Length: 416
Image 1 (cartoon, rainbow, N blue to C red):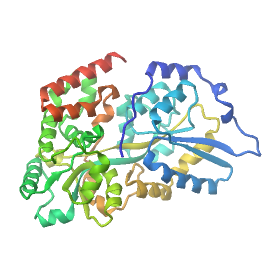
Image 2: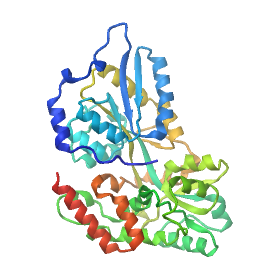
Image 3: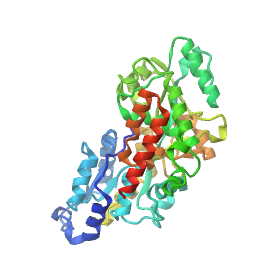
Image 4: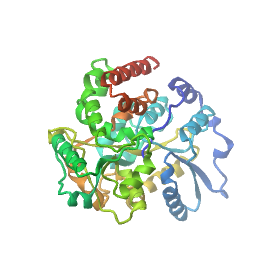
């Protein structure tokens, strides 16, 4: 699933660490081995659901490169572990996180190698490279986008057919479909707000489609506010919640996957990462996806797709050749497809196409470039957007919600 890191140590502290460290500061374990020893490199990645997938990939790499030992680190509370290791000047050789504020902070701190002109980056779709520039505010790029995901409306094809429904293309059609489902006695959407992060998939798309083209650059420049730009998204989010079940706050993500798999709702407002979990609960379910019809203008109905996993190389690695060899192995088409297949993600690498009938409903949007980054990737962790959305659902007070976002944004900016 898609989860953001918790807040890292302050940028000032991180910067001081990297300005002060040198190759002599690296621990003895990272020293160049003798000719009789294997080269050991560490691959630190933050996705627990991908641990087994990467372990299989590592085994393949080591079989082809018996002189290199890749150690995968995927600890619980990965952000806390990474924070502690940074304070000790013990940086993993390869850091694999999402394209969000975590990457932005580390890139600004000088933790990673500059990959702007690297051969590897030339393989990546330009829009995902630009996303890393946008999120960091830097002209240079310090990581290689690897896998991307997307938010979509997941629907039960069998139930759609039974109810005589067609895939909606506009917001009005979307609400009409939800109304028809509700009148039939079935649940249109299954919400899982017990897990606060599950408020984000639907809101991210609504915000991306309605916030304006340059919202985050404008708000950083003091040209706009959440109050001015997020009202439509907030109101539409509350409208969708009207079509949930009776216990939206009593169910979590796992509950929702199982409930949707059993046919307890006709649609599910989640990311495509939920599909493998749904199919574990019901391998026979017929699933389809379609882009959120967030507005009545089809040209504005984007797919929110961001960098779910990137590959960054530590500046302090003692074995850069081995690290680069592993990174290029990960970028190899057959290896990328192995990852995509198991993790139900899209590739950020040009020419590597994921063939999956369950995701056909998003193909046209990708082909037309109707893609925008996750808005919450630009929101400081301290704002706790997911918690603010929970409160919005509870009290239905859009004005208070927007005012809180503005206040929290200003606090976060004042601390920089």
